[in-house]
Length: 256
Image (tube, rainbow, N blue to C red; front, side, top):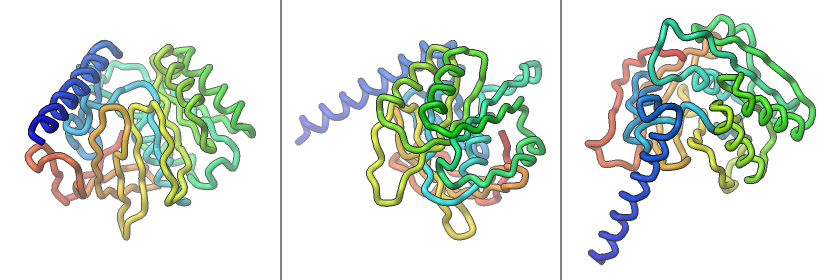
């Protein structure tokens, strides 16, 4: 038993070193990883690479008629490693496949009223094939900082094509991906996979998977008019207690 445990620990160490090496070769090195979010939560313990990849494919799983999903996508679109007053305002392309999720109920004026600094281009498309093609071409172009896609569920091949397009163009793609309760979550090459669910007067935000990810959950509130995100507490994680940063319950508002 001890030998198997040692082998498992060695395999885990090799995997973490692999993702750390991968992070060092993406977007200028590990200093460009996003290490804090959601009320100054330290993200480093939850990602083997040392933080959230600033580019590539990221997915938000949703199963409820809840505009908080769109607000969360907008927030994630604004995350960056370090704030730079001199940086140019990034462009966000929001592609909405018509009637894809039957959720969102996004209030567009809130996007422009929120403190996030983005140039926003919104596009509504009828067919999934066209929506996926538009996102893939925009990602490969390297002219868009972040793409947000609302679409019906897609297969692993489509997900891989999107990830490769993001790597080619150094682009971030956030997909609002429909997931029904009780269904298995299909595999994906996404760097991170999130889920948000109503929980009483709060919402439960969970980091449920990805590449080199340690799952965790937080209790959050989202002001859907201003798109402010407030973290109340860390609910659960799979790390030892000493490894995690737990916020107090004073709900400090933050925004992208």
